[in-house]
Image 1 (tube, rainbow, N blue to C red):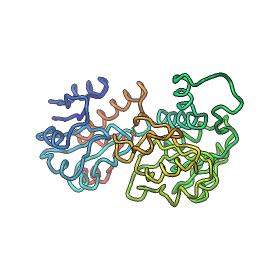
Image 2: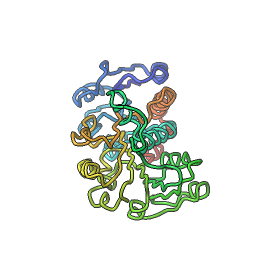
Image 3: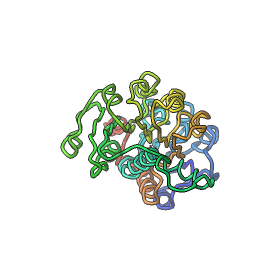
Image 4: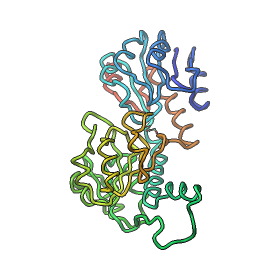
Length: 326
Ligand code: DGY
């Protein structure tokens, strides 16, 4: 078994690969590999362990002359052409669950930071503008008792909503199916996207990026958002139309936004960068020491299992595996 890893991941994961595989080639640079470097790397390899930054499209997949498995070091897999992999009988796996709490926590960090102007306040204080306590200085938004709207109530959306316990919030959610846990634990209500946008004080996005969710929140949707609301996105940048969001923020139709993800990462919209009412993070939803180690172990185990013909713990295209097993 020969594998290519597109970036150095925590040792715990690499050790598993080194123990189980005949050859482990790790991309040696601390940067996103170019497509041609990935194509070069997977030549003669049975397995690929990639990151969410790597474009694993049809061209890359078809260049893998021996490729049998792709393991993604992420929960989201929108960067991989799963359809093409499936067509070629390549097993694709990912690392959900282990990053649920870390990502939900970061969404809360953004929510608090935007509502109470934490980053803006820090900049203000450092720049020497703080001249003493003042009744109207840096007023923000009340969180406790307000309405929280969750777009996408899967693993992360559910964990995020459950962490509102103690803040006495009214919780609304927009999701394909009913979420019994949220309804039972929080008295949450499943609503239409329009109702959620119109009624929520805080909106947090927790959906995968698919053709259906691309620009789900565009100009029309932003015009429906309750005046003075806050939008948080820790899912995928392209779910929001960034240009339309920058306009809504600039016109102060919404109070603020907290973003961990962008439409064209690592590029960040220039208009957003100019605004004080948006907090911008460098896609660090899963970035805790513990989580990144767990992701590395899981991604390595998924890859090894797939290459051994076993079903990986988290398989994105189980139909391939089922077909292989006959
Ligand atoms: C994921 O795994 O999809 C996250 O975006 C990583 O932070």
